[in-house]
Image (cartoon, rainbow, N blue to C red; front, side):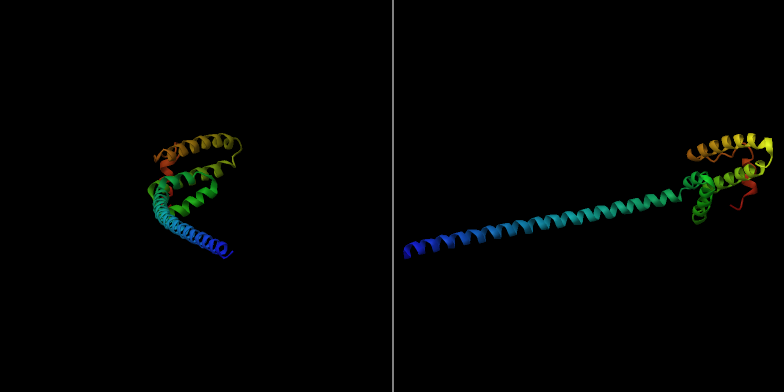
Length: 159
C-alpha cells in the first residue's frame, strides 16, 4: 500500500509540476499580449491625436474662409446676425461683401412691403436677387446683386 501511495504522490507531484509549468506559460503569454495591446493603444492614441490636430487645422481654415460667412449671411435674419459675429472675429472681404448685400436686400424688402401692389413684384425680384446672390456666394465669387449691389457696398462700408 505504501508503494501505491508513493506512486500516487509522485503522480500528483508530476501533475502539480505540469500545472505550474502550464500556468507559467499562460502568464508569459498573457504578459506578451498585454505588451502588444499596450503598444497598439499607444499607437492608436498617437494616430487619434494627429487626426484631431488635422481636424482642428481644417476647422480653423474653414472658419477663417469668408465663403462660409457669406453663405450663412443668406440664411434668414438669424443667419445674418451669426455671419456678423463670425466675421467680426476674423474679418474677410468676402464675408463682409455678402453681409452688406444681404442687409441691402432686407432693407429693400422691408421698405417695399408697405407699398400694396409693388410689394408682390418686389418680393419676386428680391427672391431672384437672393437666389443669384446665394449661387455666387457658393461659387466663391463676389458679384453684386443686380438691383443696388454696388450701392450696398458703398452705403454699408462699416460692416
